[in-house]
Each structure stands twice: as structure tokens, then as C-alpha cells.
Length: 337
Image 1 (cartoon, rainbow, N blue to C red):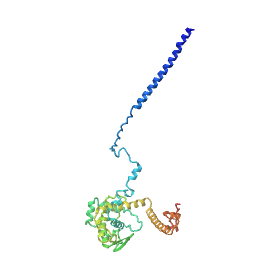
Image 2: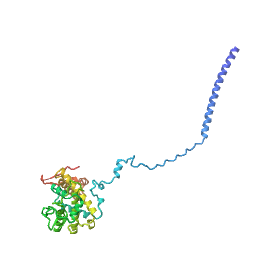
Image 3: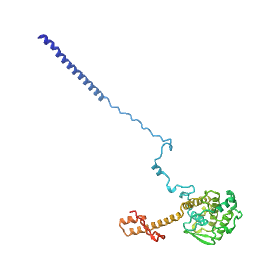
């Protein structure tokens, strides 16, 4: 009995010691954790030093890799009204101050020379005979200059068609009045005689700087200056300062003959009668706009309701003044409301 009790006693003691050892080890780990936590708490938080921001450098490859967005390019582009569609075109920026009346007078002069005095007239082409005769006689600008500064007459006076009926009369061209004297007519005819031309007729099928077209430019500018000095365009308030400016007159000539009138000429080549129809359409549109302004003003002054004003404000709602003689009717188009 004593031996059994003695043998059991150590087992219990071993268990107790094991449990107590585990407890001690657990408490040791807990104490370590507490110490580490205290150490963390005691450590002062270190404030991070701010990193300096990188200063952006200006791009060195402008226009090479980076592309401007399409919308931004559209906003920064030159307005359409100021852009040139042709190197021969003159835009508003090309007109010096006070040149407007001189330009209009020069346009009228070109129309008179070309015989484009009727409404909606279309420029024509020179005859093959006139072109062949000219190029047989002239091969350089120097020869043309020599001919117009005192050369002999190359054709008979009775063959001249330009201004054939003009003798000491007033010519009305649109809203402008041209005083054509016999002296002016003879001066122009002399020019044509010296160049061997039966009519003043530029060739719009050739380049603007062709020899034939250069001769017509010289004739137009010199005869214009002569007629201005003789009072042919005195009602148009021509600025004498620009009459002696050959550079601006050359530029104006090329714009009107080889850009404006050339566009009409090309339009007619593609579709005969299109220029007349386009001009008539412009007349109708102008009449419609005037009618709209009058009716809208009347409606506002008489306190028409808003729904009526909204209808009258639309230009397309006014078309009862568009008379078509071919059908003897007034055409009313479908209204956009």
C-alpha cells in the first residue's frame, strides 16, 4: 500500500509541474508581448519627410510626337471667311483701307471691256483664230510691252468688236453709271489694235499667267487708269491713290477675272444655265428675307401671340412672293413646323 501510494505520488506531482510550467511559459510569452507593446508605444512616431514635387520641364519635341486634339485644332484654326481657297483669291484682309470704291470701279471696267453688261452674263472664250494669231506674233512679255508703247496697228479698226456701239453715252451697269466717251473707246481700240486682238477676251481655259492673259491684264489696267483720269468713273468715288498702285490692281484683276468669273465659267461648263438659276435663287432668297423682316416687325408692333411670332420669325415661312412665270403660279414650300 505504501509502495503504491508512493508510486502514484510522483505522477501527480509531474502533472502539476507540467501544468505549472505551461502556465509559466504562457505568462512569459504574455509578458514579452506586453513589453513589446510598451516598446512600440514608447517609440515616437517618425514623421516622413515630404518628397519634393518634380517640376515639369517644358516639352522639347513640340509638334513631333504630341498631336493637338481635333476639336482644339478646330477652335484655334483661322476662320473660314479669312482663309483662301486659291492663291488668286483676295480676302478682306488683302483690301487696303479706302480701296472698296476703286475695286468696284475696276470690276465694272472689266465687265465693260468683256461685254458682260447684261444681267447674269457669263464670260465666253476667245476664238481659236484669235489665240492662234496672238501666239504667232508674241512670244514674250517684252514684245507685248513694246507693242503697247507705240507699236503699229496689227488689225483693221473695223474688226474690233469691243465697245463697238459705244459712242459718247452713259452706260448703266447695275447701280453704277459709266460715262463712256469717244476718246475712251478709241484708246481701248488702239490697245487692241496694237495687240492684234479683235475683242478683249481673256482665256479662262489657260493659266492666269499665260502670255495671252498677261496681255489682257496690261490692257485692262492701263485703260482703267486712262478712263479714271478722263472721268468715266467719277460717280463711283474712285481713290486716286490706288489707281497708280499697279500691285494692288494686278491682284484685284487676278481675283476678279481668274477666280470670281472663272468660277462662273467653270459652273456653266459643267451645267449650262446653272449660273442664271443660282442668281435667281439668290434674288428670291433676298426677297424672302425682306418680306420676313416686314411681317415680323408688323407682328411685334401689333402684339401677335408668341406662337405666331415663332412661325413668322422663320425665313422659310415666307414664300408667297416667289412667282414662277413658266407655271404662272406662286410656289409655297413646305414649312418647317
